Structure formats: structure tokens, C-alpha cells
Image (tube, rainbow over all chains, first blue to last red; front, side, top):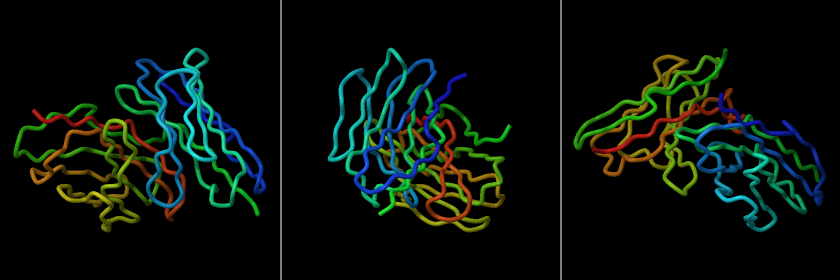
Length: 108
Length: 113
């Protein structure tokens, strides 16, 4: 059975901290892995990863995929209160499998 | 075994035809959502419903219609007015209120013949 597991489920940090969110998967027919940030309504797309070892970076956020060990991490440096959200990991197969999300709370 | 299901997995549409995508959840969630995903892009919100018999347009509602007659079900109809329907459609549900974690179904790939 295809599955995507995110950890931790929730995380509370203070502004300025660096966080690492984890996403591991066991799937067949892997196509890509996507990270989303969900605040209010629709999740916001962050990254799509298809190749191992190539870091994608956007501002204070970065992500990397390891297709041998079947996981991805999302790093956020110098966290701000605006980073508070649920971060979703999804793996695209013939269909899509989402993880349960990591709820990040950044305190002032 | 609680969850959210979508059917069919693949759907083919002929020109000028309306097709309906099914989304069912047994999580007792009040809110349900429909998204469209195109290759290499993120999710775009089509419609959402916070409560039975009520729904609101998302960012790309044109060419789509929905109904919410039951809490468990939120079907999406792709009408002939949608000129570029080929995409991956994802349904999600959550507890009431914005910002609640959304749980996603496995999706339906719609292809135009």
C-alpha cells in the first residue's frame, strides 16, 4: 500500500529558529514529490522535486529529495510568525498521496 | 476505516460533454474542497463548501459546477464550458473553519478525447 508519512505532526518554535520537516514515503510508480504550505483555504505550492540530491531553494525555504532512502526534507531558516501553517507533503504516482501534514507554530 | 475517496481514477471526456467527478468522505468533516492541478503547477481552488447546501467559488470556478446535498458527498461537474479540462482533480475535506488541516483524496485524472 502506498503511504506518505510526515514528521513531526506538530512543532512549536520561536522566531529565528531553524526547522526541518520530514517526509518519508513508500510508493510504487513515483513521479514527483511536492511540498505545500496550507494557511487558510487552498494550500500554496512550495516545491516540486523529481531528482535526488538537487536542493531547491526559495528565500528561507529549501528542500531536497533522497530517492534512495525515500524521503524529503523541508528546511526553514530564520523562522517568522508568518511561517506558521500546516506543511503538506504529497507524492505523485498515477494518483496522489498526501501526508498528514506538520503543523508549525512560530512564536514571537 | 475513515478516509476520503474519489472516483473514477481516470475519466475521459468527449468534446461538448459534461462529466461528473465523485468525492466522498466518512470523516464527518463539514468542509470540502475541489482543486485542479496542472503539470508542474500547484493546486488551484475550484469550489469549496463549508456546510451542507452551501458552497462558494474558488479562484477558477468558470466551467465547473458543484452540489452539496449531503455532508459526505461533494461531486464536481466539469461542463462543456470548461475549455481546457485536462488536469488532475483533487478533493479534500476538513473540519469546519479556515486553516484546519485538509485531508486529500487520491485524485481523478481527466483527459479529453
